[in-house]
Amino acid sequence: MCGIIGYVGSRAVVQILLEGLGKLEYRGYDSAGLAVNSAGKIKVFKAEGKLQNLKQVMANYTLSDTTAGIGHIRWATHGAPNKINAHPHTCNCGKLALVHNGIVENYKELREELTAEGCVFKTETDTETVAHLIAQEYGRCQSLPKAVRAAAKRLKGAYALCVMHQDEPNLLVGTRKNAPLIVALGENENYLASDCPAIIEYTKRVIYLDDDEFAVLTPDSVLITDADGKQIFKKEEILPWEPVAINKMGYKHFMLKEIHEQPDVIRNALSGKLHDMNSPVILDEVKLTADEIRNLKRIEIIACGTSLHAAMIAKYAIEAFTNIPVDVECSSEYIYRKTVTDAKTLVIGISQSGETSDTITAIRQAKAVGSHVLIITNRPDSIMAREAHSLIPVNAGIEVSVAATKSFNAQLIALYLFALFIAETKKSFDEGYIAKLKHELLQLPPKVEMILSHKENIMKCAKTFASFRNFIYIARGINYATALEGALKLKEISYINATGYPAGELKHGPIAMLDETMPVLAVLMPGVVYDKVLSNAEEAKARNARLIALTSSEDAALENLFEYILKVPPVDEYLSPVIASVPLQLLAYYIAEFLGKDVDQPRNLAKSVTVE
Ligand code: F6R
View: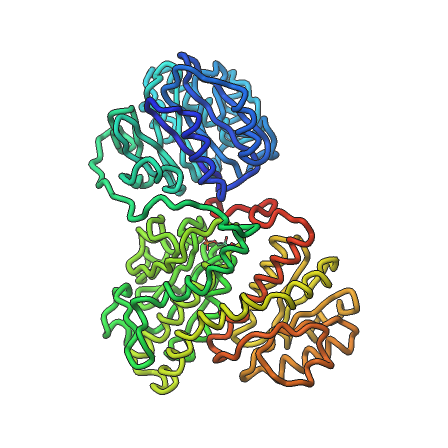
């Protein structure tokens, strides 16, 4: 959360910062700001709200003689999302400016100490303490790199920092701890950024900073040091991707475009790994030997949000195909309890961004006790990917909309392939059934295409129910997590209170809420729990709830029970979450769109959750 960028060189600094921030806007959009060293002075510009507001502010200025600059896009943690609290933050003399991603946990003590020493605070942020702290150190040593290193020793928490000083106009200093920061290398210019999209248009040469490393950038040099100023020789890497034109391709929102990309995303995720129903799954990415696989005693899957729902679905498939017990836990719970993870446990971390702070902490804890860590991510260049023992990139392409859609189904495909790969290695599941599942996996893209080309009923349903303030989604078995995911999509983009329940749990409490104001959507995919979910839906109907079914069943009797039937093509029950998730994404999308919500950038959210 929060995106930062820094540039030192002779090009139009403001333009580079604004364009870079545009590529980082997925990390937050509460406010935006930048600082430049122009004509020998630090000048700071800020605007509340989206980057567009800052662009309007900057349109009024022509800045001459700019040598370096820093920019920030904010997801507020400490202090209201207003202009005052927007970054960059400065010291009292205004000569030092910095941008920060993360949370300084000991900021209160530091603020008290600095106030007692005469610093005057202008904002409510944790970040401003860092500006004063570095300025104080600068007063002692008159060197920005030294001052940043000295101040960093006093910080607790997470930070990626980019700092500039008026008296060292051609220099930027960056450092990080538990928050991402890359150095990008150009010709007579250099960059710092939270993420590669911000710089890919200018250069593909990057250095990934590790925790407690410091980068000192001038236009023609980059020096990386440790906390004591000792030089570290780091490998330069070449980004494996081309600058992509990130545009909506005629769709009204990125979310709708990304939903429509899913047939190709699924093809991509299968490509090179599953050729046909009679060939084994190829998963060279899993760096476990056949013996290690056969000896696996337990699997733990750790993730957050939508990725957690993919994990919950995977548990059903992995346990059924491999007989290996699977525990699924959300990362933020995993990291603050005594777990029984050990060297015999395979730990799978799932993350679209590969940056989610809680999941990073969780996988580091698992590594520390000797577990093999497999990461499934859409960002093979992320922190998680670089720390993994095994890595399955899902190759869904950049996901811009904050609500995850295509990455969810790409993760599911990777997880099904993993489950089948283990089953084939262990010979733990019926071979005929494995072949059938492989065949059906390859059939998923045209089935998703079919759903996408018949959206009228989903749109009609969205219009009927858009005015409701509450929703219940029910399902059982492997689709319980599909219901949770459908409800999450609806609440995050439409702000409607949608809750997913295992259908059998309704009568243990939630049924008390049912009446005509509480629509119930039943994920009713044919399989072992079909009849059970159907009776749970009948129970809801008896309490006057208005019912929607999501099903591939041809049973004509359903029409008497359900007000809307969202039809999907038939599919094996194990794979049905892929097919069932698509209409749920579309339903959430059309409801939010009908309500006029900011679909791609819903309030209070950010695409990358880099704070605890
Ligand atoms: C929901 C959504 C979030 C993320 C969650 C984890 O649409 O996008 O719930 O799934 O923040 O993010 P990653 O997968 O990047 O670890």
